[in-house]
Image (spheres, rainbow, N blue to C red):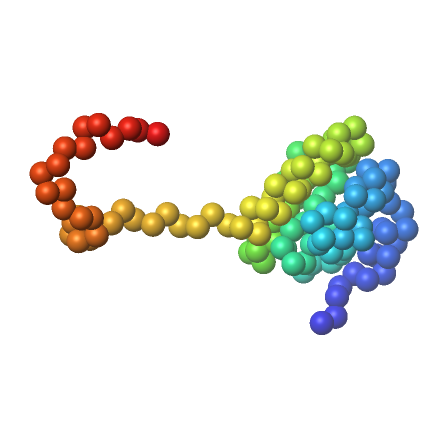
Length: 149
């Protein structure tokens, strides 16, 4: 499969921001849950700062332009389009990455755990007939003295 934007990706890797550099030190070499992350990786028409293909998780380090109205609109459009490809995007401000990398790590770790073990659908309660078949009859004995734990 031929990836798009290869030259642009290479250029972005060479010119990382301080926040991207710090986050990459944490993600590279399978340091987070043994998972492979890619840096400045193209998915569809977008280049993601960091991407874990196994879990379709993109991580973005956002500078100030992402908090302007135009940047927020573009980010929202990007999130919608990538969600159609089942790619989840986590966004962190450069400030959070530079000042609270442990919190960033924990957030990423929790998201990976959610994606790894999605909650199972709740089973419906057994029907009355099934309960009656499976539980032995009491034979008239009282259960008043049973301790509750």
